Length: 195
Image (cartoon, rainbow, N blue to C red; front, side, top):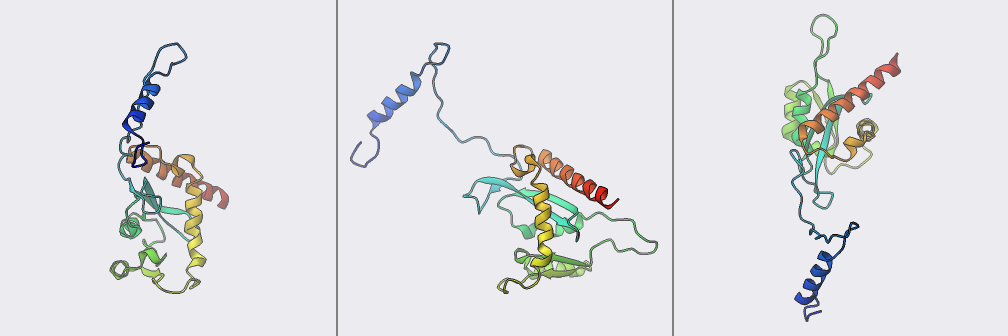
């Protein structure tokens, strides 16, 4: 140990030499490689603000009142949720309905405090959607939690698929495809229950 309570250069050299002299099972000497930072985790990753800065991805989903996923997207872990609100609303597929002018968009949109921005409230109103978004600073138990659990349940259904719980694909398009496949399986299970 040197005065700065760190390992002296001689000790570091000795440790490096010992690591290089280790003998493999077949009798040959092998050199150990020092751990280095690996390649980036691919597209749609970013340092998560809640997970000690580790790179990761975020799933965004919009569901109906029963928890059936209508649209899903994938972004980096450092992207704010509200940036995906309008792309998800636009991605809701049009459905065939009664003759005349059936409604293609939802009447109301429920969201938590993370979506409390007047800009997005106005954009939703322009599309004919009533925003039911909790206000920041309002007391908890204001009633929105009674409908928010449906989205959390859908996330639980999605994360039951092992490949979605922990992202192992470097390419974002592959992970997005698996995410959409999982949503299709969830929709199929809901259809089977209804018949």
